[in-house]
Amino acid sequence: MADDAIAEDRSLELQGPALRRLIDAAAERVVAHIASLPDQPSADVDGGAALARSLAEPMPETGTPADELLDLLFERVIPKSFNTAGPGYLAYIPGGGLPHSAVADLISAATNRYVGVFAAAPGLAQIEANVCRWLCDLAGLPPSARGILTTGGSLATFSALVAARRDRLPDDFLSGRIYASDQAHHAVRKAALLAGFPESAVREVESDDLFRMRLDALERAIGEDRAAGRTPFLVVANAGTTNTGAVDDLGALADLAARERLWLHVDAAYGGFFLMTREGARRLAGIERADSIVLDPHKGLFLPYGTGALLVRDGGALRRAHAVSGDYMPEMQEDPGFADFNLLSPELSRGFRGLRVWLPLKMHGAGPFRRNLEEKLELARRACERLRETPGIEIVAEPQLSIVAFRLARAGATGEELDALNRELMRRVNARRRVYLTGTLLRGRFAVRICVLSFRTHRDRLDEGLEHIRSAAAELSKEPLP
Ligand SMILES: Cc1ncc(COP(=O)(O)O)c(C=O)c1O
Image 1 (cartoon, rainbow, N blue to C red):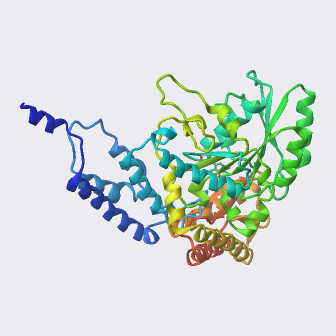
Image 2 (image 1 turned 120 degrees about the vertical axis):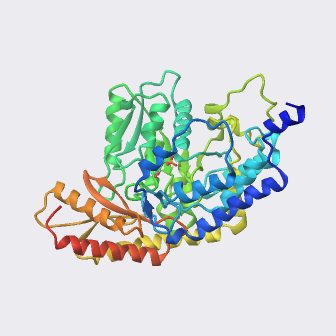
Image 3 (image 1 turned 45 degrees about the vertical axis):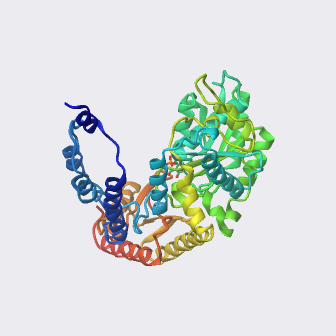
């Protein structure tokens, strides 16, 4: 082959009109996809396993035209999924996925700058540092606080636990004990395991009737552990549990943590952005006294999946837990006003996550985010009122934020029968494909939950879902137990 032909054969460059064509083709499909979100089923994974099997293939040696690949994605693959971005997604913890962040990701990836080291892209690193500062300010943390953006709440929790461990325990840390309520997210146990603790290091503390950590039970557990020669060092509080949105008494926990010399970590992955609202700020009062806080912009700030945040009151503790360098690394600057994110986080090379938070916040300002969050609080209250008026339905957990848990009751039914009845209720509602609900176990019994958090969910869709719950409950009430 001639040199020119060889060069042509190995070229991966995509630029000029060819790049524009690919972006335009993708943009056209993305725009149509987003416009159709309200009409898409709230979930459709029928035949999903067969689809997945049909996609398995070895690495291709030759290329396929982009249009064919985009058609495959948008026509066959993406439709077989939970419609997590649509207005009917009331399952787990929704977020929606602001398209602005998708555009930000395009810019970040296309420019491919390196933000882990300040000197490599000072302005971009500063944009990400601004975002972290805004989050610290929102949580009421002092100027000493530093933050990092992670892939999500789980990784942020991992870094929080490592920071607490390095700050409070010796290198030989196996006697350390962590306290979290029976409502804590399993990310806490996973982070403890990853941080090197045995499973027994995490003590589950009972919660009260409102699913908040019981302080008397916590104090008792700490006392027992100290008496047995163990080293209590960390308490994890909830600012919005995944099950019911319960918010622990953060002020009282901060007092207790101070008395017992424990690091106070607050899991605000779901609930944290309600701090932007007056009601949320009242419920989460005391969070400003935390040693560390996890927030998930891909939940309460409505971003697409892939962005969590960890804020640490003593930025030095975050740095001491993560700062390791190598001879081949560029020189790090020493100005404390600037951030070398690789010294504050487990990651070295990574995408420019800051832009996906910065772009929508800069384009809109905080106001529309606050008003959306206020609306979600209001919609959860409305759902609770409507459900309470629905024959046969009882409320298991009233909204403390934007989650309500409920179940269909039936006189004389056993616990197992009620579980089956409620699973059937949820199946029937979901089968109508306008809203998608998930359940959980509360005190060992199945409950259905509604979590309103997407910026695309408004009263019309919520009311439609409530009507489907009402009619499915009425249907089931006329039938024998499943
Ligand atoms: C309260 C809470 N904490 C932590 C997490 C874990 O976050 P992520 O899924 O972003 O890793 C979640 C996820 O739903 C959550 O609801």
